Image (cartoon, rainbow, N blue to C red; front, side):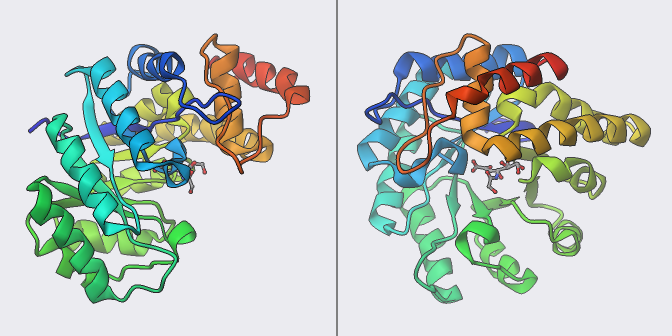
Length: 292
Ligand code: NGF
């Protein structure tokens, strides 16, 4: 299996006005990530891919297009999680046949699943696919706050190779790093990359890396080289950018930036808002100011 380490874009997916995946645009977004942002891998069908608003067939189509475009040029993680366990298994089997490097699944959400149910969900996807798995923990969206002891119980399944940790709970991050050194730890908040890198993460998965992957790579590399001063300078710059992006709307603005770069990044899937075209000049200014 490929080494899973470094900066991974949580891949954005372009949709046309009717909500259909734009294949050509998706291939362009992938190429931009690999050729311009130079990320180490892609996290496909995650939150940034708007996956929880898509049909099973659309998710499969995205897995296919991305694999076809990437081939073996980068590591690919397939996010297959769904509160429909049957769908998660079907997607896991599909990504396995496409030779994705490993799977990831968001903790099941909406219903208040208890921990036994959450563990059953992961064990079932793994049993059906035989594939390595990252837990996708994003409490702010799912309401599921896994404790250290619950991570320990999940990690007893040796096919659970790590966690994508989208949380600002740095104490828990440190405890996971300390107690489960054999598991991979990927952070999920781009604006906190430096702090997570200091804790010894193996990598990070984020939406803004689709446009700002080079800075993320520099932050991680600088921390690993012990050059905290440079890491902090680049994190400051990065956070100036992220602050502007969040104020304008995260996925809409990231797509707006890609459009300024000549990529057919489409629009967001309804009911998410479209990008406000009146703000196109603000986005252009961001592209110039941050040399995106
Ligand atoms: O978009 C969110 C919502 N988080 C992403 C990332 O954790 C999502 C993060 O990059 C992800 O990995 C996925 O698409 O599955 C933020 O957009 C970024 O830090 C700006 O706040 O929390």
